[in-house]
Length: 264
Image 1 (cartoon, rainbow, N blue to C red):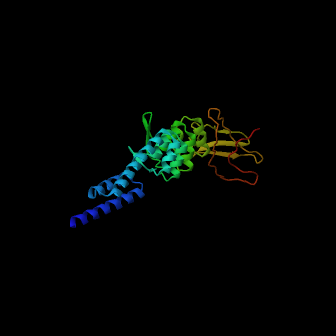
Image 2 (cartoon, one colour; image 1 turned 135 degrees about the vertical axis):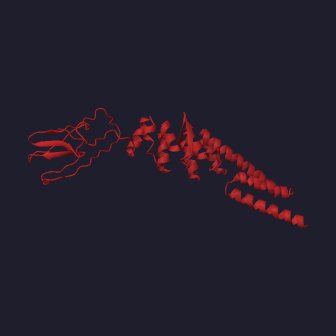
Image 3 (tube, one colour; image 1 turned 90 degrees about the horizontal axis):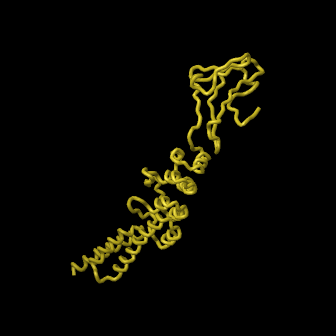
């Protein structure tokens, strides 16, 4: 009787563990718990039924992972509805990472909506190198997936511009303020600057102390310098900026700064 009571207690404890694991969608752990439970009471059909259900759940988790890898969005949605674990991970790759790998934005969105972790820093091997999920989308030119990872998953795209050759991805990154610096001038000297020092009776341009100085010598004249950007790709969105300070003189007659997109 004492042994029987002890076995019943052990059985009940493992069943409780299995039920808790099932509620957490830790289906493999549930299989282990239910498997131990029926060792303590082989006659209890409830434990056997729960074990069988847990094994089916494990198989569905594996099917979900494979469906995400294959980009089968309809099967992904079906398995999610049946209770498959959207955070199932195999070989260090989650279902979500596999959906990104397949390039199936619909599957990735369905997984995230069902509670899947975005785990952006999962690494995917691609043509000799490893890339994080958002880098992989940029590298492969998958613009819609990249937009989803940015908008819905909070991906930082600051390193993506230099690794992609996709024009549409580059334009999208530029529209967000990412991209490389196409032109910069430190005005350190006349020899290293794209601009030249010059002087006439009305204005003067000179370099000193790591700056370019502009002097208007005649009150009714202004001074400006222009640069030809014919060797730079001007497609897409741009940001132009310059650091400029007023040194001395009357600013009531005009201002100072950067002038662009003008003519004549």
